[in-house]
Length: 314
Image (cartoon, rainbow, N blue to C red; front, side, top):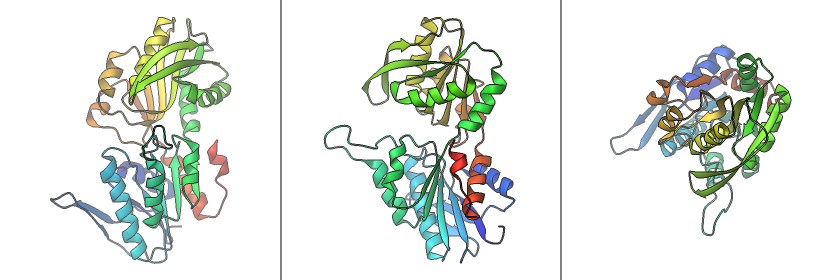
């Protein structure tokens, strides 16, 4: 594997890429990603990649546009350097929330980004917990949408040993995800009926299920401004939850998210390293990070060895 495979990283996921390399026992590829004074991005590949299978690890998280351009330019450089195949490993797929025309005269940016990634030279995409599964259909190349559930479930089993826990979906759309977790943990399920009044604005309406005297675990695919999360926590506390925790794959944590979490009744938040945390988030004792490096490394190993990756989807 070491002679044929090469893993490169943009600026957004260097630590995660190093973790993947450690699991696979391969070195991190040599690449320089620089920015000119006018903001243009320049990429320089520092080793021979001719005829090799390349995996570029880059989340398109904040700064979203910079990280997306880094990914596109790096893939273009690798394609022009005669790489055999290029796989875009995108732990967090930005622009995923705009996956349909929710209102007149609005774009479908997740499709646009898919077209850009394909045009830049990607032969395959590996990602984690897409915001909407149908985004896989926006690509005309293979897409492996992995799930961080096994890593999160393992942590929850170690953290909660009693039977008085309840999985909570913060909205109706996440009910299926929360139900799957509840089934694996052998606990009950609750759903919060939420109505949005605008982008990044949520209003809690009703709680379906019993949380009285229980440890409530709010489950979502991402935490952005934490408005949904903290409103859900407020509703759970009002309905008699004993303690409140939260877990999500992608800790975007933008804007007032950290301040909201610190001021809320939430005792702990579990996220993965698909999105690197900022300094403010790292200083917050409520937030715990688990890695998905082993999950992505195993997916890369199986893809490179022409093995099935379907068992990693659950």
